[in-house]
Image 1 (tube, rainbow, N blue to C red):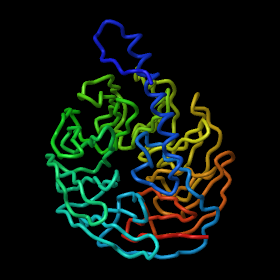
Image 2 (image 1 turned 180 degrees about the horizontal axis):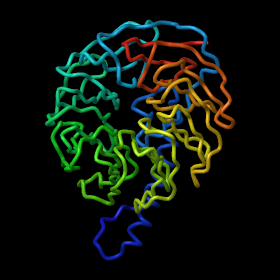
Image 3 (image 1 turned 30 degrees about the vertical axis):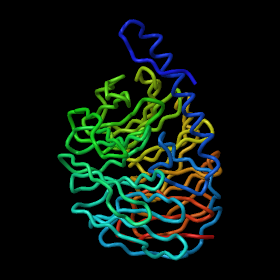
Length: 380
């Protein structure tokens, strides 16, 4: 694998080339490593690149509820799944580990603020942000706190873990790199506006958006700016990285493809309203929903529209792709699965009255949460 070289300011062309080559190599390695454990969903959007695409056994038909679990308060935290436990946060400040076989809580930790952040699991640990201004590291099997890292405002963004480092933005306007083992700050970057966007990582670059309408690429090692794209609408979605592009939607009603190395806009696609949700990628296509009530399938290379599917309500949750199906739950309406090639609806089921969260697909089941605090395990 090519070695990453620090930019010395003398050869920008060589630097851009090295970034692109390095990121492509890393992404290929990540795809190879992800495939042997298809049943796990360890982080928001499944992986560090936030592709939202898994290799799990798909749910080809969903007809009934296997179990459901009521939490305290509502849910804005997309769940993750690892080794038989589903992890999800609540607006009452709880983080729970729920046994996927029985639908019962194995443990519960209560923080002092709402948990809108989605968990990230690595080894025996969980990392999650809270509205009480902290990022927590917990023991995965028990929920016991190992450390908590203070920020100066609420943490809505979902952490991403790479190089034994936790990367996460806060509503205090800072983006943090925290050592996974010790909980000590490695560096922080002042973005200048609140950060709701959950970061993605490729190689030694971390990408995130801001409420101030910027997309940034920072060096994971020291937090230095590699590039910074200004003049966009607020970005709350998570950037999707698939070399040579970084994809993200904005409140300015456009979905963008940026050059991974330079930050230049390669193409942009207009939608009818704001884009809150993160995108998914599969088979040289990207899938993104908009508040205009359409799910779009676009060619990754050009942004050309392949198909669009009208859904019953505006879209605030992010689609996921498993084995040729795009799963999506609009804000208010049934969870549905669509053919990735044609957009044809394959099935739908009503699970809860509304949701802001992405489903998890594993072993032929769909795990979906509702804004009113119910977790559903759905089966065929």
